[in-house]
Length: 261
Length: 233
Image (spheres, rainbow over the protein chains, first blue to last red):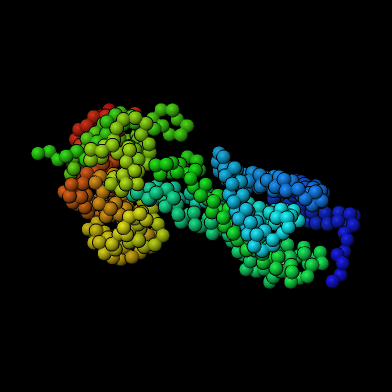
């Protein structure tokens, strides 16, 4: 195994040249996203470096409260960001997405730390934080997809819903198909990644470990672990979030709140 | 001996729509016996559909009383109530599957509808085998609407709420619908029908409410109310 090639700062800055191509395409196609591309290209690296320094400090201190505090910060940012992606904002939906993300991620992390990688101590930041981040990020994306799709379905099928309510269907029963389609849609990116893993692309975590000099078989084991944890986390988060979302659109007497769409 | 009252409202008012402070409809009074029809007449946009939604509890009441078979309908479990008081909306929709599957839709908490019984009932409204076996999104609006009436009748409700039941139908199909509704009335059912079509009102007979300016005025025969509407409104 060759040691990892160090990237000097000036060479790293050279990859910023890639931005020129993206901005050029945006200008040529009149996409209007040049400003966003530029801001994202500055903001992303700055955030990553800040997190890098914070992680170095947290890894050194190994304090459970610090680890939990960092996970909570990641959770609240994910909840706010995910809720903000809904095409029709709803009151108090960000905290409910936060609860969904917390449950989905917690189940996976508990399985990981108790059954698969019993770290010592249980809050070992070297494991908990990167795994927590991956689970939160993927679950947030899935929940956003689910929520957006569900709102679209409700908007397009108002009359279908009311027709079923008129003849005695409950609110949840009247949107069962739409709920299922939205949940399925939210699982597609995760399932696709699972289906083509190793054939079309090497997953990010595995790539990172191999670059860092880890035995490829060990990297595969961790990647398999993350796939299974993701399936649980993404499914649980999307399902819970959709359930919360659905409850917003029906009164206790099973009337449809189409005014919220 | 008069038939017992099955459905009645006293000073019923709808809850305001979100963002509004005043109810859309108020002062609703009627009393409907088994075998009777009540017509809700009025111009487009006068609130006839809101009136039916209020009676189906798709919309909340803010005041007044609504009784079904002598019980407080506003306190009944809403799903049981809507099973007993079925509403057929003015705009029919096609669900996935054949028209027959659409007709057989019933809440998961209820027993499944027998398909042969559904075919027989649909046949009386002019929906033959060819139509029933076609995908619901390929049949006409009139056929879809009649499918909706069959679905509601198969649930054996006590009261049927109909929104413009013959608006999308030709005269022959309308006659088949009137005949099916008459059989429902003969079996002690009761109907509340929103329409601006005098032919529907005349064919089914019964009493009428005239909905105007957010309230229901007068109870009289449909013909008299249609004349009133033509003269004054």
